[in-house]
Structures are given as C-alpha cells and as structure tokens.
Image 1 (cartoon, rainbow, N blue to C red):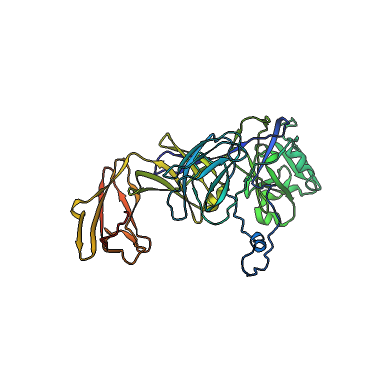
Image 2: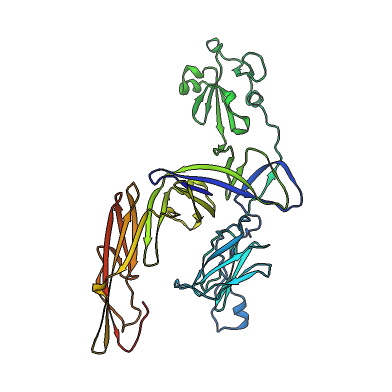
Length: 476
C-alpha cells in the first residue's frame, strides 16, 4: 500500500497495489491477470476435534497432541532486502540472544541486549526465530520491520499468494449481446455506420412507440448513450417488454426496457468478483510478467478514506510524538495484510504494517513521527526524596510532562505514562496522584486525552510513593 496523509483535516489517500512475480520458467507475454485472495497451498480440510484423554505423561501421548493452528496474517514480500526489529517475551521484556536465520540459507544473526536485530536478506522467503525455552517461530519475510513477541504457544504462519492468469479474449459487442437477449429485439446503428450510437426496438409493439428507442437502466440509473459502456463491464443484461414495465417507468418505457447490471470495478478498471470464500481482482490491462525477475507493481485501486487523526505520545518510553489515523468501516476496502509506504505532508516518513485480520471495529494506522509536536518528561525535584522509617525505605517520585503544538492547526493527542504496580506484598505503592488522568489501577497506566490549539502548551503532573524493606532493592 501507499498511505498519503496530506493534511490532518483531509481524508487519507490509500493506494492498493499488488506485487506480482512468477518463477514458472515460462514468460507471461501480454496476459490478463486475475489476482485472488485464496491460497491453493492451504489445507482446506476442516479440523476434526478428537477426545481429550488425561493420563500421566508418556512419550506416546506427548507426541500425539492436537495443536491449534493460528490464522496466517503475513504475506511474503519479495521487495524486502533488509529486515530489522525487536524480539520480546510474553511480559514485553526484550530477549537478548535470539537466533534469527533466513530459512534454507546459512545467513543469520542474534538479537542484542535490548532485543534488537538487523539482517540482510539473501535467497530466502522466511525468517526462523529460535530461543531456548520458547517455541520456534517461522514467519514469511513480509516487511522491513518485523517485531515478534515469543511465547509458549505454537504459532505457524502461512503465505497468502497471488495466483492465476488468463489470456484476454475478444469481447462481444453490446449490440450482439442485446440482439440475442430476447426474441423480437432488433438492433442497428442510428446512422447505419459502424461504431455509431445504437438504436434498438422490439418487434410487435404498438404504433404509439414507433420511433422510440429502448429505455436503458444501468445499475438503477437511466442512461441514454449505451456506446459509453464497455461490454466487458456488463455482468447481466435483461430485456423487459411486459405491460407492467410502463407502470414502473412510464411512457418512456413503452418500447421496452433493458436492465443492465455492471461488474464491480475499481478506479483503475479492475473488476472485483466476490466468491464464497475469496475475492478476485480481474485486472483490466494485460501485462507481461517475466520469469525469475523482479516484481511487477500493479495498482488495483485508490481510495479516499475518511479518517480521524490522533497523535500519540508515551515519553516514558519514547519522546517522539506519533500520528495515527483511525479508520472505521474498513471492511469495504477489501484489505489484506501488507506493508505500507507512508507519506505525511508531502514527505516520505517510513513504512508501517496493515493487518486488518487483527482489527475489530477500528483500523489504526501509524503514520510516523511528527517533529512539529514536541513532548518532554522531567522528574520533579520537589518529589525526589529518600528516607528511612523503621525497617522501611521510602521513595517519593514525581514527574511533569509538557507537550507543545507547533503546528498551525488544532490537534488531538493521547498521552500515556505509568505508575509502578507491586507484585510483592512487601512493596507498597502509596499516595498516588494521577493528574486528572484515566487511571487503570490493575495495570498502572495513565491516559490523558488532550486537544491543543496552534502554539499551545499543556502540562500534566503525577506522583507516587514507594515503601519497601530497606535491606532490599527494586528496579524502577
């Protein structure tokens, strides 16, 4: 995808593209492509749920377990040449020393102390992530940034591929389609010349209709010039000539009505056909796809997507401010998981990943960092104190967050921070001041939803006190 956000008060421009490549050994010269969301490599047999018998562990029953298969959300992207990312455990802590290899090759690397890695891709389609005590993960190379949270559950990911092609056939003309659509229909050119506007009549109608053409209804609308529609765009055609037709459409339908339903097409001319379990995009223009070569980029559709733009900042982790676009009713765009190039206010701002399968009501897209919105987090010296009372150590902590809007328009921003949550009864978190935030007591998360005018600054403060045994230490 290409995502282009020109201004935060305008719709998001989304360009839907396909990367087509083939390794058949045969050149595809001037072929008509059909891009499908189905994958012939997926096992289409429904699962059978067997009884779950409990017994003491043995080699036999440990090798005959039924494991759940996760839905595959990733697609191999042959344009990716370098992959980087961060590997975390279930709690969100970085995992150092994770082995990452390109499947089928000797190329690999390991994560550093912070769980980060970078790897050049050469000759493979999948990355294998392995770490002692965790299940090995095999994921198609789908993006230049691939982050992963490793856990004890078996996760397997499949590749959804673009398949299918066909030769373009010579289309029927509309007049020949209409000529054979019903008995008694006669079609001719208005002036007898090839390519002229059509004139059609139904044999046997009364003299009141003499000189009148048929009435054409295309997708529910009256159309006068049928020469403007391509026969390739017609899904169904029906000629109506019963008496009830005039009661529906009036005297203009006295010579008969042609009801036409067109195929669902995109702005680029691609035809969308919705099957029972998949979507097919029939590309309008033929393409030549060489074998064993780089991908061919085909634009399927461009949408103007209404979006709510919301900034997000979490200065406890990162003092950059990120712009996000929230899209509702995203199901109508027929999105698939894929990497997106992001453009903001006329400049390229990086890549992001669109995964509609992991989305519920709202699709949230990260559009990158906006340097015109600044956030700063400082520890308050007035709250920075340490003392001992009896056998306990007392720590007072306080922070101030300042955020400034240097843009020329109003912005909405979600600001987040956190207060520690004790997992030990000897560690007490007391005297919590949340600074009028939405406070999640179970997770310790603070959330502020702010609106800033141009050149406006706002500050938020919060504080807490820690009490724990003086002979022990904690990590903040």
